[in-house]
Amino acid sequence: MSGKHIIEISHLDKYFGDFHVLKNINLSVAAGEKIVICGPSGSGKSTLIRCINHLESHDGGDIIVDGVPLDDKVKNIDHIRSEVGMVFQQFNLFPHMTVLENCILAPVWVKGVPRSEAEALALQYLERVRIPDQADKYPGQLSGGQQQRVAIARSLCMQPRIMLFDEPTSALDPEMIKEVLEVMVDLAEQGMTMLCVTHEMGFARRVADRVIFMDEGEIIEENTPTAFFDNPQNERTKLFLSQIIGD
Amino acid sequence: MQQIIKWSRENLFATRMNTLLSLVSLWLIYVTIEGVVSWAFINASFLGADKSSCMVRPHGACWPFVTAKFNQFIYGNYPAAEQWRVNIVFVLGALGLGLLMAGRINFKKQLAVLMLTAYPVLTFILLSGGLLGLSYVETNQWGGLLVTLVIAVTGIVVSLPLGILLALGRRSELPIIRMMSIAFIEFWRGVPLITVLFMASVMLPLFLPEGMNFDALLRCLIGVSLFASAYMAEVIRGGLQAIPKGQYEAGKSIGLSYWKSMRLIILPQALVISIPGIVNTFIGLFKDTTLVMIVGIFDLLGIISFHFTDPNWTSPQVPITGFVFAGLVFWVFCFAMSHYSKSVERRFSVKGVNK
Ligand SMILES: Nc1ncnc2c1ncn2[C@@H]1O[C@H](COP(=O)(O)OP(=O)(O)O)[C@@H](O)[C@H]1O
Ligand SMILES: [Mg+2]
Image 1 (tube, chains in turn brown, red):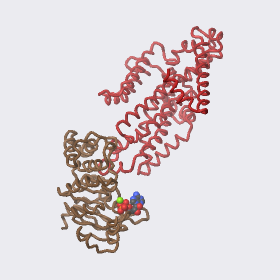
Image 2 (cartoon, protein in one colour; image 1 turned 135 degrees about the horizontal axis):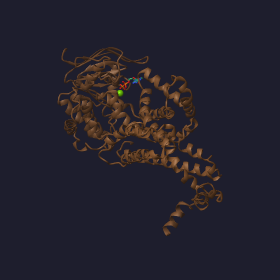
Image 3 (cartoon, helix red, strand yellow; image 1 turned 60 degrees about the horizontal axis):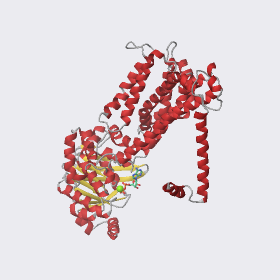
Image 4 (cartoon, rainbow over the protein chains, first blue to last red; image 1 turned 90 degrees about the vertical axis):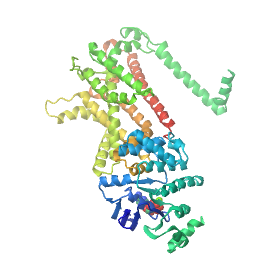
C-alpha cells in the first residue's frame, strides 16, 4: 500500500506540558480510505486528528499529508489546510454570517474564487447536505442537525481531499443524529478520505474500512469493523465496547 | 381617564410601600422641575448687553452672557472673517455622520472611507490653512467647541484602530509583540490624563532639539489619542476573550490566515460585543477633553470659564449659567452617542449575532 498513502503518521509524540498525550502513534491512510477512531474520553482522539491539520503542533515524529511534510513552514501548513477539511463537535459556524456567507468565505478569501462562482459551488454543496433552501438564514436560526450539515458543506466548499470529523454527532439531539450521519455516508460513498472520531457503531460498521481503538494516547487495536466489534482482542477494547453497548 | 386611574392603581399605588415610594418620587420630580423651570425661565434674564440686566434678577440664569459670548464659545479666537471654514468642517462632518448613521444607504462603504480619509485631510487644510490661498490660522487661536470636537473626534478615530491593534498584540503568541503591547497599555492606563498632558506640553519640548517647534494642540491630540487607545485596547480585549476558541479553530481549519480570520470572523463579533464599552470610552474621552484647559488650550469649558473674568460680566449668576450651558452641550453630545450605540446594538442583534 505504501506510496499511495495520503496521510502518513510515524512515531508521533505530543505533550501538553508534562502530560504525554500521544505516544508513538503510527498510522497510514490510503486515499479514499475511511477510518473510525474510538476510545474512552481523554484518550487523545481529538488531539490526534487536530495534529493532522495543525490545530495542535506535535513534538516528535512526522506527519506527511499528500506528500507534504507538516512542519513549521507556513506554506506547508497552508497547503495542508487547503487539502483537509474539519468538522467539529460544536459546529463552529460563524454566527454573524448567513449560511451562504459561511460557505463562500474560504473559497473567496483563501482561494480567490470569484464570488458568483463560489456561491454557485456553495449552493451545490448545500444541496448535497440537503439544505438548499436555508442559504440566507443565520446559523442561530437553524437546528443543531442543520447547523452541522452546513458545517460539512462549508468544509466541502474548499474541495478538500481529506475530511476530519471530531465527534460530529455528540452535541446533537438523538433525532438529528441520523440526518448528519446520512450526509456522512453519502460523502463516504463518493470516495472521500475520512477520519472520524465517533462512537456511532452503525456508521462504523457501514462505512469504515478500519476501526482504531485508542486509550491513554496509544493505538491499542485496529481492525476491520466486523472483526473489531465482534471479536475484539485486547482487554481494554472489550471493556470499552461492553460500556458503550451497555448504554 | 379611567385607564389612567387603573394604570396608577396597578403601578403606583398597589401596596402601602409602593404608594409611599410613588409619592416621594413624584414630590422629588416636582421639586426638581419647579427649581429648574424657575431658574432657567421664570427668574432668568434673557436680554442685555452686559451684567446689569442679570444683577437685577439674582435668582435666575443670566442667558445674555451666553448669547453675547456665543461666537467665542464655538470658535474661540478663530478670526471672524475665516469662521466660514470652520462652518464647512462642521456641516460636512454632521452631514457625513448623519448619512452614515441613517442606516440603509447604498454608498455607505465609500462614504465611510471618505469620512476617514478625505475628510480629515480637508479638515486640516481648512482649519489651519496656509494652503490654497487660505490664510494661516495658528492653533492657539482655535478654541471653544471647535477644539473640544477636534480633540474628541481625533481621539475617537485614532483610538479605535490603535486599540484593536494593541488588543490583538496583547493576545499575540509572539512574546515581543505581547510584551510591548502590555507595557504600552499598562503605562498609559497607569498615568492620569492630566499628567500625560503636562508631560506632553512641558516635558516633551525639553527632549526635542532646540528650535524644533511642535504644536501644542498636536501634542495634546497625541497624548489624548494614546491615552484613549490604551483604554480602548482593554475594552476590545474583553470582547476578544468572549469569542469561543472554536471560532478561531474553524477559521484556521478552512485555511484563513491570522489577519483574515481576525478581520472576517473574530473582530466583527468581538466589536459588536464591545459596543457598550467602546461607547463608554468615547464618552469618557469626550468629557476628558476639558482637561486640556490645564495646558493652556481653551476647549468649550475652558473658554467659558475664561470669560467669567470679563469685567463686563462679573456677576454671581454668570458662572452658574456658563457651567449649566457647558453641561448641556456636553450632555447633548454624550447622550447622542449613547443613544446611537443602543440602536447599533439593536441592529446587530436583529441579525441574530448576540444569541
Ligand atoms: N490544550 C490542552 N492543554 C492541556 N491538556 C489538554 C489540552 N487539550 C487536551 N488536553 C488533555 O489531553 C488529553 C486528551 O484530550 P483529547 O485529545 O481531547 O481526548 P479525546 O478527544 O479522546 O477525549 C485529555 O486528558 C485532555 O485533558
Ligand atoms: Mg474529543
